[in-house]
Each structure stands twice: as C-alpha cells, then as structure tokens.
Image (cartoon, rainbow, N blue to C red; front, side, top):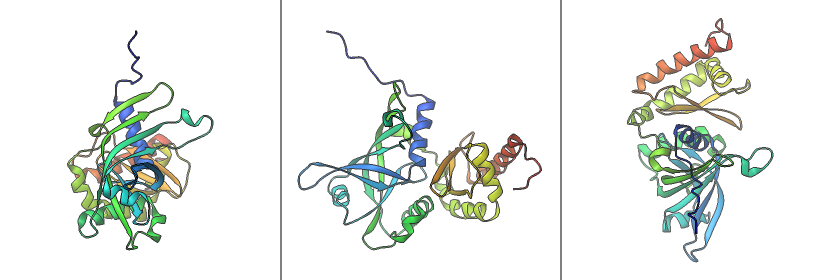
Length: 259
C-alpha cells in the first residue's frame, strides 16, 4: 500500500500575497455556521470587509439564521473568491477558518470598524445604523487556499494577517487621510489604479489603508495595491503615497500631470 500523495504545496510569499489579496478585495463571501438547534451546517452569503490587520468583518442582522448560530458557537468558515469566465473551479478561492467575536456598539473599535466597513461597502449605509444589525470580527485560526489547478496551500492565521503594530497608529489617521486623498488628490488615485492595478480610468477612491497597502474602488470594481515595504509609522503613509504617485506618473509617461 502506497502513501497518499500530499497535494499541498509549500506556502510561499506568492501564495500569502494571493490569499491576502482575495480577502482584502472581497465584498461578499459565503459563511458556514452550525445551527444551534439541530447542529446542521448553514451556508449563506454575507457582505464582507476587513479590519486593519486583515481580519474579515461582517455586518449581519439579528434576524439572519447565522447570527444566533455565531452567538451560540463562534466557530465558522468563509469561502471567498470571484468566479470568472470558464471553469469556475479554475479560479482562485480561499476558505478561512475563524472564530467570531461580536463588536460592542460603543467605543473606538466599533467606530473604526464601522468606517472601514462602510467605505468598502457604501450601500450598507442604508441599514448599518439599524438596531438589529451588528458587526462581527471573524478572527482567523487558519485557511485553505486554492490558487487554481494544482495550487493548494494550507495557511496559518499568521500567514493571513498583517500583525504590524503600526496598524493601531494608522487606525487613528486612516479616515482623515483617505478623505483628504479622495477630495484633493483624485488624480493621484487614478495614477495608482492605472499603474499598479492595471485598471481602466474611472472615479477611483481610497477605501482603506493599512500597514501593507491600500484598497481602492470605482463602483463595483475593487483593487488592492501593496506598498513595496510595510509602513514603519503613520508618517510613512504620506511619503509612500507621494512616492508611488511619482513612480506611477513616470511609468505611465505622464510626468507633466499634477496630482
């Protein structure tokens, strides 16, 4: 009898980057929970965003079946990944294993998560303030990444998360920085989109900034842009954004444009 062939590849930087990108860009996922009455699995779609460290965040109604399920048993998993043309199984996806933690309505943590969620999910403003809706952080315990045929990886929580202590400092500066860029430096954001994300022209806005990169969106199109090196402080954010705008301008041959 022969040993079963190990189908998992060794986790490398490319796999980690793909996993983080899938989670950061996603606006929805399928969540799996356990019915507290029967123990049967429940799978349903939820809106999705991330906290600064990359932890998935959901906003759910108390009337949804998965909300009492998460309260009774916080173990859950998320299936994340867009399906494109052709074979749906050929496209990258990730299953994140997690434990849910409800976010109390009062306090700085709720304010931070609410701003990031609504920047990423602007349509959720219609119901985010309703009394029966609440945020949960789905804190990863591990993940299974399928990058396409023959590209399977097992990831740890540390692989998936950005545990840079600068994220706490960025949380205090993020809202003002993003609003300033969106209001006063739209041309720079357009350069980021074209050069780094290879995205078409549009009305791009920054929706979140963390120690490893930032997220931009134009309507339903969401892109993730990575810093060449993680930020060392909140002050590095401004310098990195200025430098990247210059690099994009030069790379696109638009040195005469202002940002």
